Amino acid sequence: MIHQVPIKSLPQEWLWCETWCSDESKAKAKTIDLCNNPKTKEPKLEAAIRIVPEWTDYDSEIQKLINRIRNEKTDRNPSHPKDEL
Image 1 (cartoon, rainbow, N blue to C red):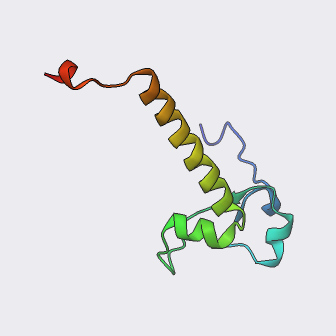
Image 2: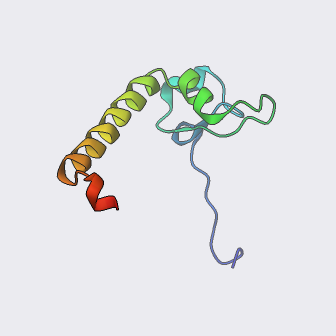
């Protein structure tokens, strides 16, 4: 199968990764791969916060959405102590 389907590589700007790309090339990156850096063993969430400046804002916004959905679900289905018996 490998010999039948040609494998193409994307230009570096399409998939930037700190492990093999320069810091200067990050400004032109279209996507950022939060790959594991075998040299640092840094957890992905910590790397995301460091590499992607707006990550904290996105993470906070998503957490607010999760909390809102949980609250709406709780409001629609309030548990009654006598129902749990």
